[in-house]
Image (cartoon, rainbow, N blue to C red; front, side, top):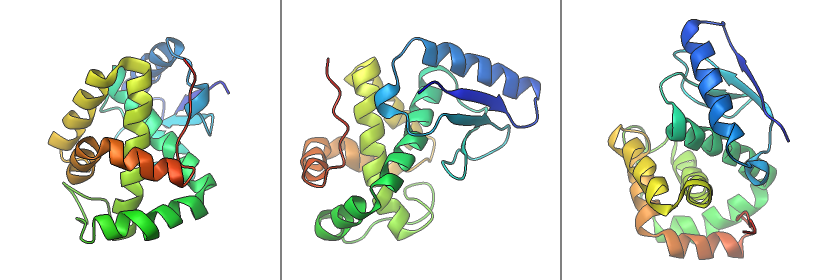
Length: 178
């Protein structure tokens, strides 16, 4: 599925970010991680997945690619809401009974923090496949240091293999050959 990247207000920063993202995605086959093809670049926005996948102008290059994949993974999880709910209830909540809510370590709600344990794992797994494990870890650590889901990214990196097994049991992994 080819991406349709457009700007929200056609500002210079948005045009520059859109061109950078188009150049970045042209170097990679993102088919396995694309669940919506509509991408909006909006200056000053907080990246979000719904109703339309929207990215800010704050990131570029590999960090913007990781943000794009992160938001795509929200679409993947939305399509598998029952599987994500089972993973949350059966495995994530018992493993992490207390999670942070709010920045810099968690998401807006407890449930969203748990969801981000899945989304961020999928993001790191995809970026590792595309750019290598060291780059995926560096980007995740950069986001954590910037106050974006800090606890979530650190937890995912620390418990990566265990979480991967959990997500495999709940059909929440994306398998890519090669």
